[in-house]
Length: 93
Image (cartoon, rainbow, N blue to C red):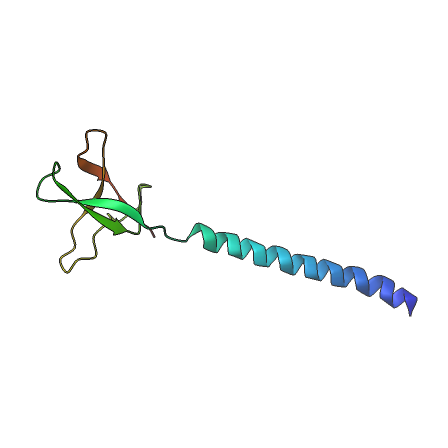
């Protein structure tokens, strides 16, 4: 009986540790993919006149440009050092 316990307990401990490692990795991946709302700007009608909007976008380059959630979507930008809304924002994929 003691021999069986000496074999089963380490196997059980290893199994629980493995399950914990796998579940924590999935949580980290989900956290990394979470979107973050940021302040962006819509050109209205020129790059010197901007309207502020809140969007789920990123300055990191992806395939799609960041668009507003209006009935007719417009491109969303960040402001540059000259306070003009001309820095690209991209949709989080």
